Length: 69
Image 1 (spheres, one colour):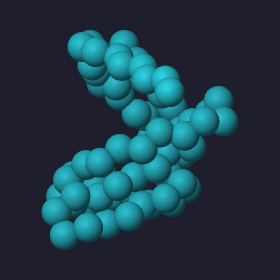
Image 2 (cartoon, one colour):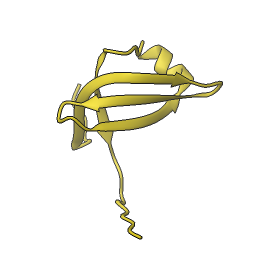
Image 3 (cartoon, one colour):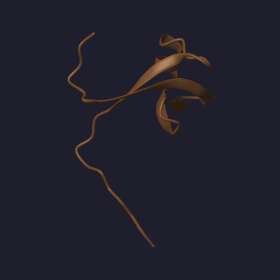
């Protein structure tokens, strides 16, 4: 599959927290960091996500914000 999304981060599902409507998925990236995605419960089921499954996190954003104290 070809995608226009340029920010593609490969990793492995390390945790899944299912909810009534949304599922929170933590992905351990190949570089050692992690990223968390909130996706619909239906999407998580359709993707057959499970801990240990390799995935690609696709990041498409028009803004990046930073904060400091």
